[in-house]
Length: 153
Image (tube, rainbow, N blue to C red; front, side):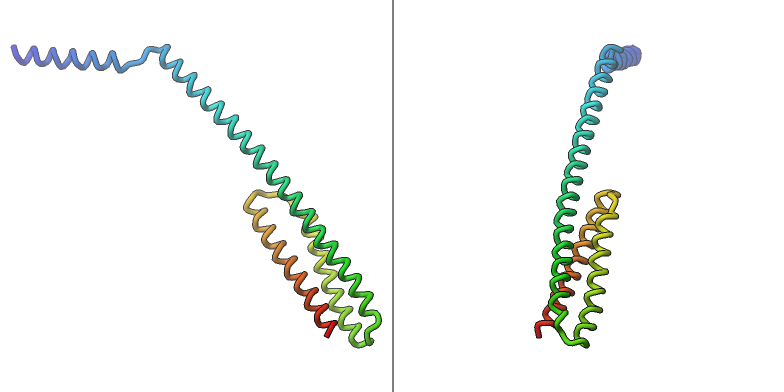
């Protein structure tokens, strides 16, 4: 008798647990609609973030490009001024300087072309391009400084 009562109590407990744990179909639909709404909001936030990131990237690239073009133009101006200065040098010195100037002009035009040909392939590529381009521009500026220092001596 005790076994029957115990078994009946266990079944009653399990049945009560199952009924209280189960959700009605209306509750399931309501939960699903809430989940869909949250997902839509997450997608909208992600789109906003992506658009903002694109705008930031474009404006950063434009700023970088303008600054780099100004540096290239300054190098071109300095090269032209240096050409005018060495025109009065001795023929042997002039030939040496003209050769170095031709190399610097080629490097400067290569940098101009590299900047114009850059296509945005992602943030990682942009960062590496920017670092490499700045390093090359610094080397070009240093080479020009070294050339003008040698001329003054």
